Amino acid sequence: MRPVVLVADDDTAVRYVIEVALRREGFEVLSAHDGSQCISVAASGAPEVILLDLRMPVVDGLEVLKGREEWDPHGRIPILVMSGMDDALCLDLEPSGPVEAILHKPFDLVQLVSTVKRAVEKARSGGAGIGESGSDGAG
Image (cartoon, rainbow, N blue to C red; front, side, top):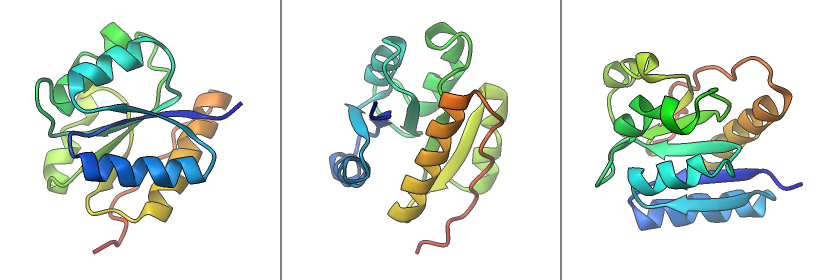
């Protein structure tokens, strides 16, 4: 069974590049262009992992995280945050729920795919977290 990943980003070009990279690696990819759509897709139970941009229209990524108990009450879906924000701002995410990793924009696609694979393994095994990815060295 192909792993299902939800990519939530309002930037069409970024979303497209991520979707292509993940599909090449055998993932099934679902898309959301804002936080409201992300919540709807996530609530369906389909995604195994969510790649979530923090700055989106309608409902932003931080609001998605704050309302997580409503659409993922058991916290079973690993969330990988994509952000162009400073590290200090990203550290404030922990109280909003379990963020498995923070991928800083611009990010390296090889690292992104690797991080998604680890998150899928975690979701499927129910194992320990994949840890903070920190800076990926992409420039």
